[in-house]
Length: 470
Image (cartoon, helix red, strand yellow):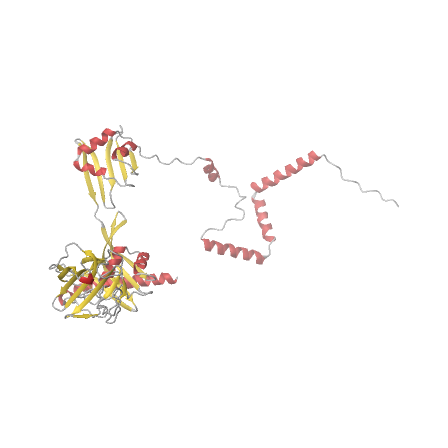
């Protein structure tokens, strides 16, 4: 039995097939771009049916978690194919609005290297004759010739291109102005008065006090002030340890919303080797200012612990030390503080200068008598501070000279001696006499100022620790 071959499908020209494919593609694209509500609903339903309920719940949860993590709405899966709203399309077609035009009568010029007032006026479009007119109108106008690189000059012009006003800030607090009047240009200096506010910092010492204080936000001068406040109890040359902490409330000077300087330390706390010291600044009714502990005892003692800030102890008090130059056993009746040449040396206490001059192996030396009991000596100085002379008087903390290497010395350092009734004692081990505490009549007033400051330090510290644990 013979089987007839199946009938082949009719063949169409290739061009017809390509045309049909193109039409089908266009129809599909049209459905995607302009879907009817029925088509959109079916497409969404179909996509859900293709996934198991567990998979869909997992995707929904993932999308929800991502939205919470980023705090941003989860994008629709059809966002890329949904047509944009009419308003958005129109906005996209419209050109962006033009930026507001600058004031043509206001011009700013910044001083560059080599600039003079004439070149700056030329950059602002003013003739050289205007410079002469400005300088001749007011003697103080010459202050505009004292230019600094980066300084900005602001010119206000008249509609006919003449100078009407010239302004420049010379610091955060001062500015100078020239204003055109009937009789020429009038000069004016404006000084802003800063507002004082208090600020708080906390620091932990990891390496050195200066580096840790800088990281905490204290300036170098404020760090030196803190060292002076606690300098009666803490030897910053040898006592500082890793892990020591400090809290400081201090004055900030603010002008136009910008910090332009610092004032005094209002209160501070320093924990050194497990022991905590407190200090509060107080001005009594007579106008005298000093620092006291939180309970009213004076921070000030008759002598500061070290006469050189942040120096390194290179040799201690010893009765059997071998002299580095003489090469023989010779008592070292003081403490040597090594520091860079030129480092300031401070008087340990108030007193009378018995000597400010050369003294044998000590080189340039200052000897101070403090009352009838105490005497201090400072040797190997590079030179003496202005006004320090034999027979004069000095105040505690006053700079009396500078680190050097005069006399029998192997390098720049201070040799410091401390005598009690003519007997040399170890300055590092000597118990220092205290100054007077807060007077009874002032105690209530002092506590009214000190207690809020100490409470604020506690509160700020607690807030800082709580935020660090989050």
